[in-house]
Amino acid sequence: MIKVVVGGATGRLGSMICELVRQQSDMQLVAGVVSDSGGHAGKEISQGCRLFPSAELEKALERADVYVDATSPSAAAKNLVKVPPLGINCVVATTGLPEDLLKSFEAGVQENNISAVVSPNFSVGVNVFWKMCGVLAAVLENYDIEIIETHHDKKKDAPSGTAAKAAQIVSEVTGIESIVYGRQGVVGARGREIGVHAVRAGDVVGEHTIIFAGNRERVELTHRAHSRETFAEGCLTAIRWVSARRDGKIHSMAEVLGL
Figure (tube, rainbow, N blue to C red):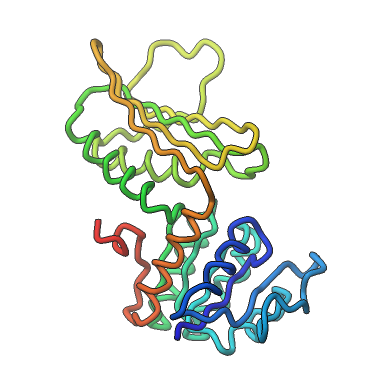
């Protein structure tokens, strides 16, 4: 039985992960972690499982095999330095994490010989989308490349982690180093660059399109998420995969899926 603790247990994604964990025959939700000021701490969300304030993260993790962080960048910055010394494996589903935090977390993973899965998107389809971005970029040489992402009007970070990852993959494959985030004013002729654009509107769960445009044709690849449950289901796959590992490494969802 894999004992799971979810950080951000009352959030959009966190609450869904909690619900799915409770439905699994091989998992047990042993605790949730919430904001100190949210008013939810101390409540029971299922029998034997209560919500701890983030200040009591270590106490919440006393029975855990895997900690899932589905919080915010500011909360994750505090949480992810505390978990590795406890010897607990992690699945990090929080997006918009700064590079210095990820490097610090990686050092903690190595030092304490735990394992972690970190991904800006746990959807199976998105991970296939990323794979195909690299394939298309390698084949469609000298095509102009634009990435457009659309999310609901409450999303805090822009561009999305998914779009940023797509841009990183394409940059590595093509050698294009210039990434332009939106355009305004008299920008002149397009250079050798990757354009990234963020749209925030309504209740869109998530949509990503990458465009490869040549002089006589263009290829567009799109992924649309119809429900956040696809992200939560991917997290469960990652929990199972990482639960028994002890290799001192951070892994991608592509590794989990064998891509």
